[in-house]
Amino acid sequence: MKKRTRIAFIFIIIITASILTGCRMNVSNKDKEFYLKANEYITAINEVTTGQKIHGNVLVVKDGEILFSEGYGKADYNSDRDFTEDTIFLIASNTKPITAIAIMQLQEKGFLDIKNPVSMYVPDQLRGDEFTIEHLLTHTSGVKRDLDTIFYHPISKKDSIKEITSEPLEFNPGTKYQYSNCGFSLLAHIIEKVSGQTYEEYLDENIFKPLNMKHTGAATSNEDLPDMAKSHYISHNNISESSLLYDVSVFWGAGNIYSSIRDLYLLENALYVGEILSKESIKSMYENGYGIGFGELNGHKWVGHNGLLSSYSSTLLRFPDDQLSVIVLMNVGNQDNLNFNIAQALSIIALGEEYTLPVMKEEIFLDKNQLDKFVGNYRFDNGGIVSITRNNNILLFGHSFNLTPYSDLAFYNIGSEYRTVEFNLDDNSNVVGFIFKESVVELKGSKVN
Image (cartoon, rainbow, N blue to C red; front, side, top):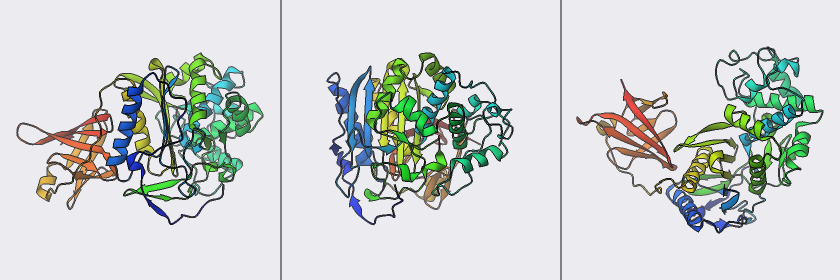
């Protein structure tokens, strides 16, 4: 797919009313109430936000049955093309779990052992005898995050691996975590070395074709991408088509796979039953975080990943103990955070947990003196620190976003209005902390001296 120059057309966004298009798969009649609640939540998000919108395909599956399958917005406004279950998106960093599956397959076949040093498979790797394939899978190898190249220029596999293998590690293996796209490019290289096939051929023959994933593949450059949902950008309730800025070759093994909601559903089902990978290997992936993240949501354990590449974002969340999977694919920029948030919100609804709908907020004015009491450093429960500062009449939440007041103690973020910060006072009316909320997730922060 050749790069496109930015098209100077702008539509007043119509998805605020939640246009449902032709994505629907065979939805179960088991839970009509969930279907209504899920659509209500997405509609509410799209009505209250001015910049970030749910725009793409959304799928929720529980106990092997599809509870929700909808498309929001358009795959292409120029041709008035709706989303379908086979509409193709870049899945960005959700490439990594698939790369990890391929590595685990090769271990089962006896081609490699993830406990072995990388030097056994890539002799040229600098300090390759000091870290293992497992270190690469868990982002603890010390291999740098990204290539030193312009992301929208294609790069050959040979050149990318030469750069990765020859550069010093950024820390001693196993001593810390640092997310690394380069580490997964190195894994793709190992797949090629031990299988005798290209990375793209191996995935196609051992994962995609066996699962009948007809609309999924790994591209070597943007020239190899099929006809996908067009990439768009949303700002102030306006939507415009945008060019695909980054070349997928830069993220070989880490972000170069494209897929559809139907194909990812097939992959999810296969993993539940151990069709392309043994349940033992899947369990090992989940427990150790090989190519995936993991956590809890209201006490429910999840594994999964999200991804962002140019104007495409994706989230795959799976709750193994609850037999629940949520997949969200979007074709609009600046949506990585909202993509993951809506997946969590739909998970909460499907799990029967309590939630509140996002509502419209009206900005009020607070003067500098009123704002100054919020300025300071705050420590999250997980130990992280964020600084809240004031620039004239604007509060800044770290380096992330501005805070707009809608009450004396509560603020929201224009463009991402589902994101709020509400401050707490002690008995002497001193600010002592806040509750930071994104959709259904809340984090508490305490003010520190």
